[in-house]
Image (cartoon, rainbow, N blue to C red; front, side, top):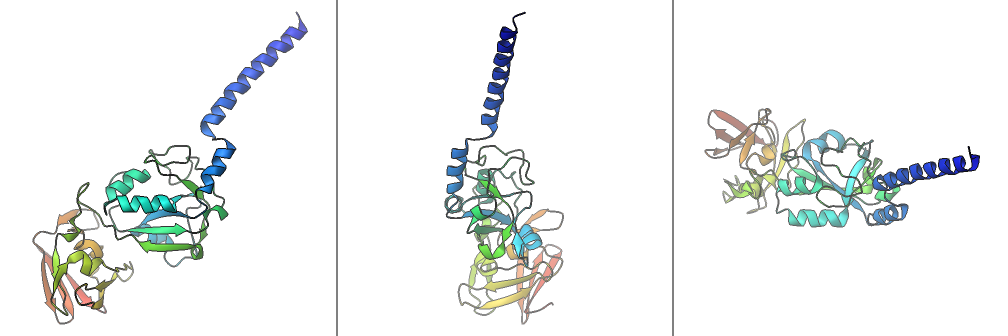
Length: 279
């Protein structure tokens, strides 16, 4: 046996294996230079969206936010484009961000992270809690938006805003102007979403809603009956949503004003909304 040829054969085999491993590594791990350039796109900030229930459960009143397993964010410019192109519809948002359809059936908040590169910014691996069946490696969502993940970050380094986007009945349809409601002060009828959803603030413990009438500017802080869920968009979205996630069309809703409250009636169900305090 030629020992030298044996070593040569062994070396060739080892080299072949290393070549295969290297090619597989490149398939899953973009070149370092590419990763650096990708991260640079986030130098001017990053953004992500939160459904309202997550905001009130995990963000409101806390000093730090973000998923400990890795918080997915896109670029601020990408988020600007997405919100400008969605036409106030949730379906386009879900599709662009790789969120399963109809997952977000509630108001949506935007979180802008001012310095995402300070918080161990990296490409997502797919092992993060937020990864789902739509996840793709390489730093882009299934809808083509750039994305990275970061460690949790201080709320002080963020800006959180209500996008104003509300649930829609079907793709491309926005029922937010389906109903009108008269202001108790000036009695001017305005689109329901302008009266009930404008500057809305939902607090689960109190179910309190701040409303502004676009016609006269009257501000009323309303206390919602515990039997109603998300009254802030009950009228705005053209549907009443119950705890079982059933939706009842708004058609047939009657609104009756009392000196200190508003009564909403739909079929056999009645909700009483009292100004500045429980009814």
